[in-house]
Length: 118
Ligand code: 5GP
Image 1: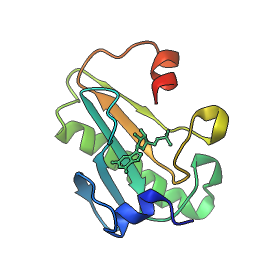
Image 2: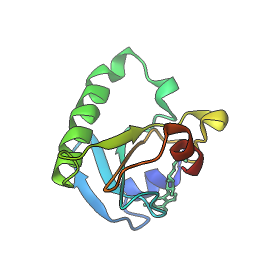
Image 3: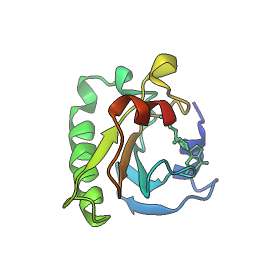
Image 4: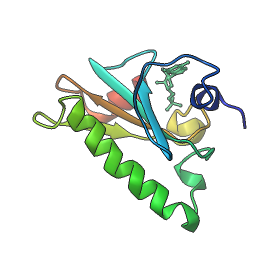
């Protein structure tokens, strides 16, 4: 696929990386939609959540646990935060590499306005 997120994984593009392990990576969104806006991605190239399969069960579980850990490390646990994954054109997905947005640091608006701005 060779998306720009793959280039970030391969260190061909710079990113403000806040977490990395053998399966996933988290970095700051370049156009933050909230005071804290992080993206958590698998290193495996999966276009979106619609493309996961049985063999990704462990990977997705791992990423969900890391989403919670990373949000906690960013200081978001006390007041809460939002996790979003966009899928395809109608979902507003721009980068076709599965990613989970972590948004927080302020009281977020209704879900539909937040989705429109991502
Ligand atoms: P999507 O709309 O596909 O769900 O989200 C893609 C996200 O990637 C957007 O929030 C956008 O700001 C972010 N993004 C796009 N290009 C870059 C980049 O080069 N670096 C970083 N860190 N984020 C990016």
